Image (cartoon, rainbow, N blue to C red; front, top):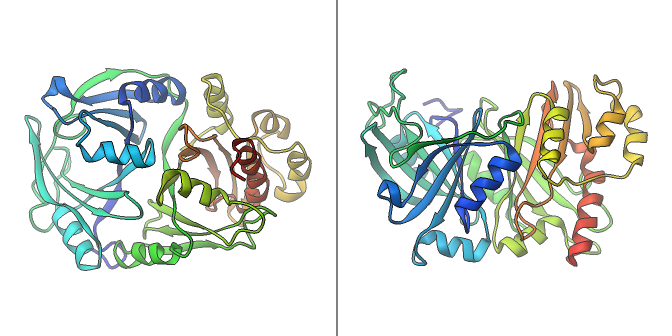
Length: 379
């Protein structure tokens, strides 16, 4: 393991949500977001504790899990938070090493290293705590095509199944919308906790501060936030950490999230696509609701971002935002919350060289978010 990657992280393996009704949530993500059901775990597979569906679209894996009895920890999670992200899981070179190194560096243990197995082979699994009730799992195994060269018991684990032990293939195809991979996952933490959690990702996972935004960058008359983007050494895993800045007139969107989620948690998942206009058109046709910005945003766009390949009327029609940095530009749009509580939402984005996060769009976006807050009576 290198200094830049002390835990041997390879990629985000999957994101697991605890939800009140996985069967219905699966239908929503398949019909609205174009995911395909790929695997299942539940009573029919011998799982008496939970029902889980694996949803997949290209390199994005979402797991939707519902407890089957009120004593399961997931039941308390749903009671407190509503539907939300429980586990941002990593594939690692060696789960034992990742876990032991993380704990040595100050992480709180959640699941000690253990074997998971079925007829398709074995996987090594462990987990640590992060902000709120969110955890990071570590999974190590090879798929039978590539040998695993880890140090210790993470090496030599081979798994040839569809996903993980306990899941059986169950394919129901969705109509893809062009989502390719997870670009970043944003965590909202309590006032005064942003630096604590940024230090956690630096000291425990070996991440570095990629970009910093303060309340001068991100503020309106009603709300402000501060944000630090933490990234692994390879820029494959990026976690912006937000905290509310001191309120001016009203309740910031970060504080609204924390109040309704009842703790820190994953605020939104940014999904990268190749052609955002095509993807957003399909998502809107499927009933996904997006935030909109005033028409004046598009009148000012040419002076702010310069020449772009896309024509502005088509972006305006769809509500897509544009921002530029010294390396290129990005196109982005944000859904409204996808839960009853104003908590989890999604960002759809396309990068054309830009490695930023849409700083130039924050003000217009916040005005739009605040209008939604006002309608909810939470501003």
